[in-house]
Image (cartoon, rainbow, N blue to C red; front, side, top):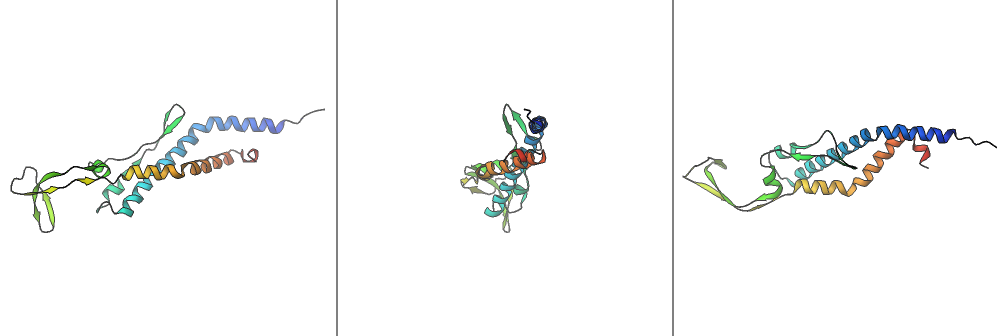
Length: 160
């Protein structure tokens, strides 16, 4: 009596190929997740009307390469604007030197003739909310992407 194990050998070869491609696959999936979080931050800015020029919204960025730390993959999502921290976390009340020119306030460093007192401003926590929104549906997205990768490698017929 003989046993046909050709399918088992084909499955083993497909798994070995997949094992070699795992770092690239995970990098691609993690970068896509970073882009999703970035897009969520931009969406929150637009929906909440946080800024008037759109500069803050446009400057949300995500990394282009995943960072591997042991069995964990990470990606950076950030906003490098100098005032991004103030919008994210808020800021305490303080005196701002300057003067009014029509309907707009002109900041002048060290101006002693006038100014305005800016009261405490709470933060919008845009990035935190974007990451929370990303984590809510992350498992489903990653599973879907991973199954697509298995299908590309021809392993979908073994998943049934």
